[in-house]
Image (tube, rainbow, N blue to C red; front, side, top):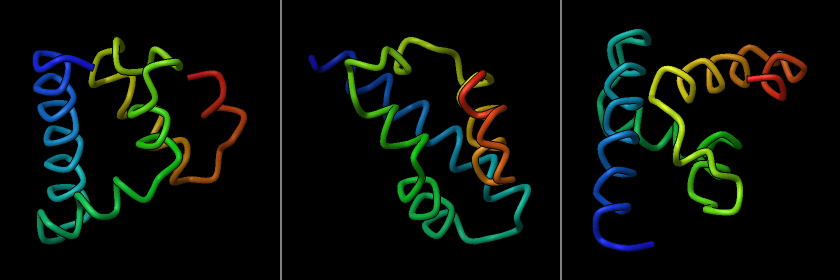
Length: 77
């Protein structure tokens, strides 16, 4: 990826971590670690999935489906 893509990914990752921090009432570093351990984050980092082109709301919905164990919803997201 190029520098602009990397910056956009960092912004999306920070946004998701911020949402987790707020919702789960956890430290921002812990929220970032938590997000980075998910399948959603793994797919977000893979340019072949094109998930990096989706909006933060889409990624957030996908993450929530994964965290709830709703794999059918996760796959549909």
